[in-house]
Length: 157
Image (tube, rainbow, N blue to C red; front, side, top):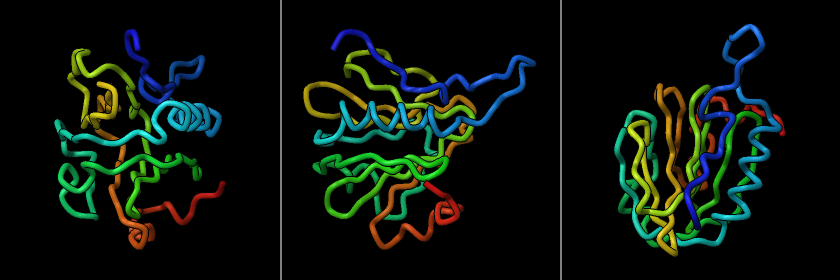
C-alpha cells in the first residue's frame, strides 16, 4: 500500500457553509464502514498500542493484551456508532463525535500527534484511531457488555 488513507469526513469535521461544525451523517459512516469491511475485515491484530487513552474505554479487560491475536470480522453502523466485530466475542464500538477518524496506512508511516491508538495488522499495515479534540468514544467490549455502551441501544439503523 502506498501512502495512507484517513477515512473520514469525521476526522476533519464537516462544516456548513456558515462555518459551523456538523455531526457526521449516516452516509459518511456508511462509507467508512464499507472501507473497513473491504480493507480490514479478516485481518489479524498483531498488537495494539495506546497513545492517548482518554477516548478508549475497555470493559473487556486489558485492551492491548486482550485484542492481540484476534481477527476483525465485519463492520456495521448503528446510528452514529460504528461497530467492529472481533473474534472471540469482542467488539470495537466507536462513536467518533466531531473529530474522530480512522487512518489505514503502512506501519512505517509517521504517527500523527492526534493518534489515540494503533492496531498493527497483517502485512505491515495499521489501523489507527485519531481524534484531535479527544471527543469521540471508543469501547472495547464483549458480547454481553453491549448494553453498557451509553446511548447505543437508543440508536436506529
